[in-house]
Amino acid sequence: MKIHEYQAKQLFREAGIPVPEGIIAKTADEAVAAFEKLDRPLVVVKSQIHAGGRGKGRFKEHPDQAGVVLARSAEEVRENAERMLGSTLVTIQTGEEGKQVNTLFIEQGLDIAKELYLGCVIDREAGGPVMILSTEGGMEIEVVAEKSPEKILSEPFSIHTGLLGFQARKLAFKLGMEGKTVRSAEKFFCQLSRFFVDNDCSMTEINPLVITGEGDLVALDAKVTFDDNALFRHKPFDELRDLTEEDPAEVAAGNAGLSYVKLDGNIGCLVNGAGLAMSTMDLIKHHGGEPANFLDVGGGANVDQVTEAFRIILADENVKAVLVNIFGGIMKCDTIVTALLEAYEKVGFTVPLVVRLEGTNVEVARKMLSESGRDIISATDLTDAAQKVVATLSS
Image 1 (cartoon, rainbow, N blue to C red):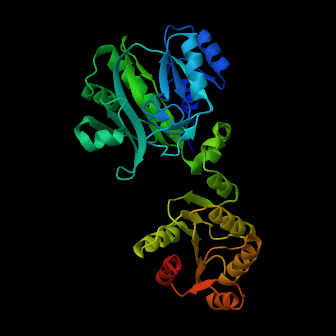
Image 2 (spheres, helix red, strand yellow):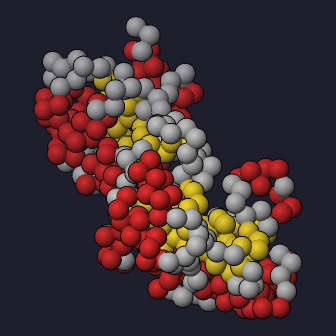
Image 3 (cartoon, rainbow, N blue to C red):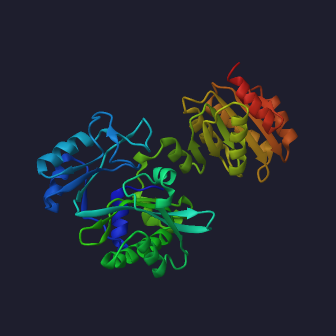
């Protein structure tokens, strides 16, 4: 689950991680009131969407307007807020469709001496969390990794202790810090590592992390993503979720207990089991097709879930055919076909449907399909299914 910058910074503040003072605004009047309350000669007006690259992004309606701007007066704040609110911001991470800006974050300006990059992620090779730092603050870390990998530092840390003091100091020295800044960095790095672990984050990024003129480290930006599988341990985080920033189909799937991710292809996939779903998509690609989604209905899907799965798949206008690939292990194949046929009637199909079944009671289930009178193409194995569903697109 992703959250907005202003929400992440509030959590940072509660964890003792230094952040600038800021106030959210949903109207131009609120933005001006925030400027006056901050009472600073310089503020930053920041668009709040679930995407990075906002400072370099541009609005569809105002191509010369960036998603993050400086303002030195109430008039400038109002002018920018009126342009930004309700407009669509396109960044390197949103794609061409962009995201509508509904909230602004009005934040105090800082005396910035240096910008750095700081992130924490789970590293599968290290078998745990890793802190990543670079002197190239403000740059996309992917670009730095490609063009200047020697400028990236990484340090694994324990989920039990977080980053230790000597590790933090080592990183600070490698970044060229001295004196007071080293002490500030040690505290900052250790606190952020504990924040990452304590809140079950899958990614925490500060870009840029700034060193002020006084030598202190401050999180000028904040991007936090939580592990969905651990949200049951953090019920207060439910209030941080912004459904307007999420794909409606993925929200509907989640509410139905389905795992769904929209892709760019035209062959819808309904599969039970994540590994089987990945294999299904691979074979579709192998035989010249393009999967339109990842959709795992799980091992105990019922009629309502299968029906909702079909609705979600067919709501995608790009879908021109559907492949159902089911292994009847926990749930018997004939039970699955019963649910499938009921869902077929409820939803109504206007595109070809290919079904591959394997597992317990598979022969009974195949007979049910063949005698159903429905326009369903049966496949004997996964390769056969992939070839048949791809073939429907050219017939």
